[in-house]
Amino acid sequence: MLCDVCKCNDASVFLTQIIEGKMQKVNLCDACSKEKGVQDPTGFALADLLLGIGAAEEIEKGAPTQKCVVCGFTQVDFKKTGRLGCSECYVTFSEGLGSLLKVMHKGTEHVGKLPQRAFRQIELTDKMRSLATNLEKAVAEENYEDAATLRDQIKQLEHQIAD
Amino acid sequence: MKFNQIMASGGEWLRGEGPHHQVVVSSRVRLARNLRHRAFPGWAKKAERTLILEQIKPRVEELPEMQDSFSEFLSDLSALEKQVLVERHLISREHAAKGIGSAVVMNRKQTLSIMINEEDHLRMQSIRSGLQLKSAFKLVDKIDSVLEGKLDIAYDQRLGYLTACPTNVGTGMRASAMLHLPGLVLSDLINQVIQAVNKIGLAVRGLYGEGTEAMGNLFQISNQTTLGEKEDEIIARLTKVIETIIEKEHDARQVLIQKKSDTLSDQIGRAYGVLTYAHAMTSKEALNLLSIMKLAVDLGAFSEDRRLPIDELFIDTQPAHLQKTSQQKLNAEERDFLRAQIIRERLKNFPKPDMNKVAREPAPKSLPAPPNNE
Image (cartoon, rainbow over the protein chains, first blue to last red):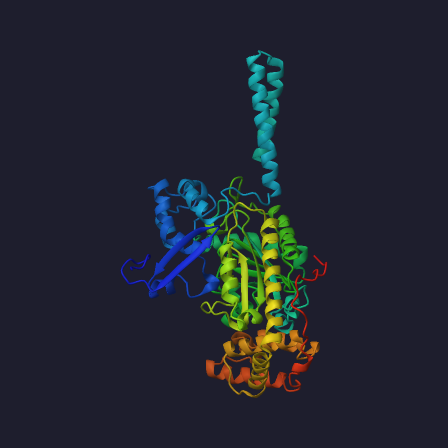
């Protein structure tokens, strides 16, 4: 059996991990297992390893030639390091990352802590949405007085969000 | 605060006074955070890394928890000093390899350590003795909430906190406990336990990771996933699993006492004999024998006041601690001589283990309620 990483040496290290009933298997040769830190359990997680092997292909599917506009990171870099370039990379490579995160984690959406700032942002976005709906309604009903008030409120809110 | 003060004081968690301290050495919770739209440390050029560091470090230092803190650039610490911090679990091995553009800030009690520009811009860790994951999280969560008001933290409504490695995205939280499990190891039950823990999506690792065989019967257990589950749910799940392992460990110890008392006496006697008379000892051998001594204290073969010297030796016999204390660089052979010498000196007045004092009790069916200090 050949090594899953270098695909040239015979595999001598066989790893199996079961997470939530899903079995993941990786076969490695001696050299690659050392390089990947498999013999060093503190630095090793199968997900990391799978990430290095399968992740780049996953990302390729979604973004064949994409480059992160903020940091210039590419899929080739991801294949090399198994890490992303900056927070914006999650948007740039979102399509490919989606299926990767699904395999790696319990769910696909964050349900934990909300930073206060993001929390405010969400509140403001919600408020904006309801104002926009009301404005549409007011215009449709030719209620221009209300529409003007709503338009001013939206402008004010836009400033707040920008802050 | 200077490095020598860190060396001089053991740090709160090393004293081993927390709940379930006989089995749970320490509890750690770390949060990974990053600045929005700035290259992650592994991708940033040196200049950008330095800029990010200059932006974050003062904000960390001004935290009320960081009064009289130890704050250093990694480039200003010697290789030996970094290794000492690794041995105390105050920085990661990855962080110890960093130089220009990275820093560490920790509080006086060594319960809170913040790595700047490790794999993520911020790695905030809280460490407590015994099983105290909840309170460790509370402390680091508080710091996080203060810092997010001063720094533009990368956060996505759907994915949560954004991290350099997708394995940490979401909560960015890794909660882990260091367990001392000599009973399960001596009864050959440890592999079953590790497999069972792996099956439910938790990771088991060695002390510093020397292959699958953990040194000193010490094992770290932590959550594997960070997305799709709330922080307190992750901690509750982990705590429950750890409590089950504690129960299994106590059961295994009772079975050893009742059914294999000769083997147990032999193990303890050998550990005592070798530690008090050997003149050369590797750190692995020392950890394995000290683990048996710790077990002997737990079981009553040594009196309770012998616990602290044993616990201290776990850390003081580590390679970097040995060299820092003796203030010289030593090769492996010299370290083995010095290690044995230190152990002999500290155990000089230790009485022989008294196996008659080992408490025989019916194997516990359920655990006593943990002290309510969370």
